[in-house]
Image: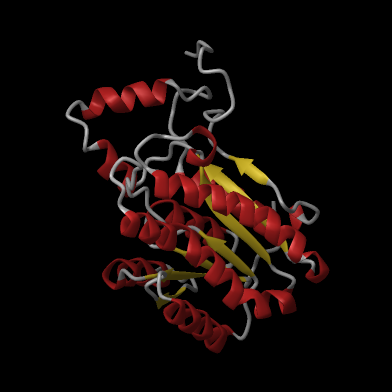
Length: 262
């Protein structure tokens, strides 16, 4: 299917690894122009170098996303390079384990900044260009907003906020024909997931137990599956879809965990 994304300039925060990289790869397959926003210069330089060596147009800008000025400068760099922005994928963040019992106020506030506030900042700074292009915004979220997880108040609150902002912006941006949707992830094996699962002494057993509870085929969602769903939401093929939370999770969040699957 031609999603009509050729030469569309799409910003992907945290696009140099994990789910973000999966989204970038899906954009490239549709001949779009992904722009990766990250603070990790070494990682993004290698990724972009490899894509360019294979003949793909990819750009990146460095920014610490908790800093409003750096977010603004990154967006300005994209506009200076291409003269337009057609889409924004807010993806960067980390399940940082800032829980309730610790009473860590500073840690909680920092978690909101690194997981939620930059979604607002990037949407705000890209908005003038999105108005011109009638572009789309996709916010990547987590099932923790629905299910809870324990020990991660900052991340769970941020994801609840992501969902709420998706609906709020969908309403606010109706006059400009800008669609806003969220894609909710449950269990997707990324470098950050690997880091988390490695904190358990029985890593393999823990991973097997989680995978067994994923109803569809008892397997993790792939970054490619996330990426392909994101580019559909960005494309004109989903032209009358806005304000929606799309769960790409193999049924993990909503299906009955007592279902026997083999």
